[in-house]
Amino acid sequence: MNSTVTTRIILADAQPVYREGIKSLLADHQNNYQIEEAGNSEELRPALLTFQPEILILDYDPAYFDADELLHTLSVIPECKVILISSQKKKVDIFKLLDSNIYCVLTKDCKKKDIHQAVCCALRGEKFFCTFALDLLLADRKKSPSVACCPPEGLSARETEVIRQIVTGKSNKEIAGAMHLSQHTIHSHRRNIMRKLQIHSVVELCNYALETGIVKPET
Image (cartoon, rainbow, N blue to C red; front, side, top):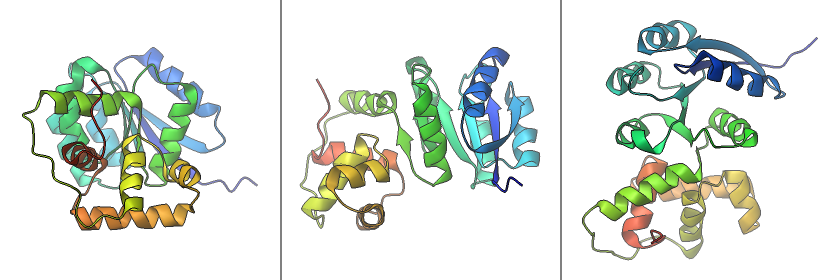
């Protein structure tokens, strides 16, 4: 008998054809998924409250999904991890959503393996940001008034390197491999970094890394 735990997922996209495409990609994966669908805010809000998904895969389009309403609903079910699929033209609301429980950000140009990795990372409570999401942060930083750079205080050289790796969008497993450390050690470093800097999200950490010069915006 199959004892695999079922993961509850809501696919929220205004286009039924695209929802079918994502369902097809997920069907190829080894995990068991119980999937509900929503095509707009009116369908999404009750689905979130009744289905209580572990993951929401949202193709964010402001014409069909209201950011403020979504944030309010997500605040009621903070255990729901969001995988956001969007594009450059919608970045104003993307920044608003990034301050909630967004765990992964993808673009429709991402590959099949990226979607699978995003789902796996979200289930583990890890972040997964594709290059697109990091570009948004860098572009926004370039347009912001310049901030005086101060050296990172209280961080070890290893912790600083972990920050660089996180900002590139790597998972704990990938960072552990690159730095020849265990995943447990990387997890401990991440926890200590967040505590030392009093930071609570990858978005805040990206901004900190840019402000202090740990990473440099590309010209």
